[in-house]
Length: 175
Image 1 (cartoon, rainbow, N blue to C red):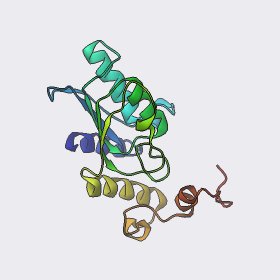
Image 2 (cartoon, one colour):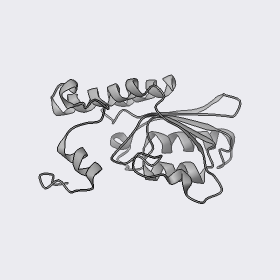
Image 3 (cartoon, rainbow, N blue to C red):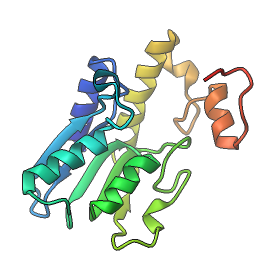
């Protein structure tokens, strides 16, 4: 997970949302490392997990990552979890939960979808380090101190996130 945090720091330094991912073989050998590159690539699919999966598949010469472990600093979204399931990753280890889009239990539980692969999920590994990196990044973007934006559980208190968690639409947002 520390390697994934290093990748997340690279993302933050590049102005990307600080998410990093690492995939290891069953032997523990690092197959791939990646960080978010959505802004650089101008692609909504350039998430750290997607890039790490593609690189790991190229590394072993197979689309199946059976027995491999994916370490990621933020709980995978539905898109990434779909790729994880299809690649047959054996285990997912993540740091920070994502109440807005987490697909490993925070919002959805896609690992329970009846496919051939149902990865083992380990959550909250280096949670505080992962949350701090995310909070600091978004606080700097908003120009507000991170400590004013954090709740006791580490999740943001802004209206948009609160609306997403409650399932309501925030009328002040124009996305």
